[in-house]
Image (cartoon, rainbow, N blue to C red):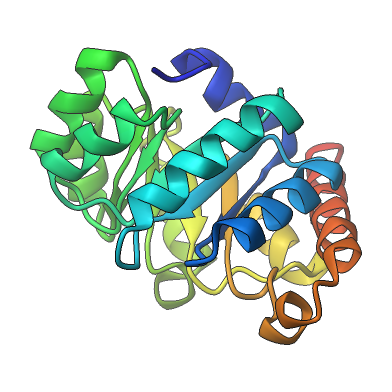
Length: 223
């Protein structure tokens, strides 16, 4: 079962503004990345369902985080069907994210009162997801749709909570553009985890980058 309720999870995303998105087949490396992000101030982490036996790695990461990162909400990403969502919820996922919107996934998550953040690329998709109880929708792919999409959507639908994923960079310019447009938070993947840094086990670099990105998000909210 998820260790945090829906309100707590969404609050963690809002307060930090940054949700790291990561996958690795080696559970030990995944654990170190999670801890590095946590040390950098992250409180919501998305582990993507992208490799063979990914759920087994996830199970180890969740158990590790419960002990070493007690305030961290660990969720799962790249979920496209209800069976996969149910599997990860059973393993302790605190939230579920997908590249697309599947109403059946919403049903599974709503039954457990776990946030489901579906990927949406149109205003109508966001509206349909909201009708199915999705408090937070993912604008994806972010680098294709751009900040103007977010600004245009939130003008007539100001109640919308949006997380942008895809092409988000840990720079002041990029993060500022998204928050100025009106996002709730941003998901950040490869730009936050350079392959050479992972290979070199440079966990401090990741911690510093997370802290830096969280700082940029905080700056935007004080303006």
